[in-house]
Image 1 (tube, rainbow, N blue to C red):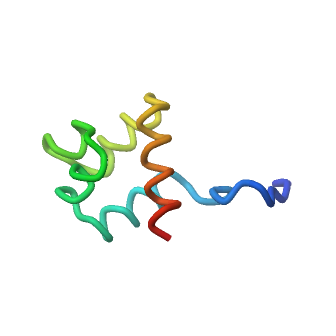
Image 2: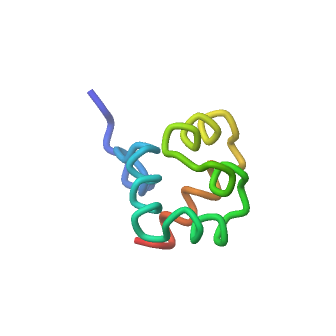
Length: 71
């Protein structure tokens, strides 16, 4: 059973959901302008971006911050 986490606004939201929301809101070009990450510029896709973000904590932190600022 998952614990309720009142101090974690990202609890229960997957990285894929975050990325889909941001792509819908900004598009790939807009995402690249907001966050300079090569996976948003060079041949971008959801799967390749997820693979990179899951391995690279600093990039994931930037994406999560943009999401929180965007909602």
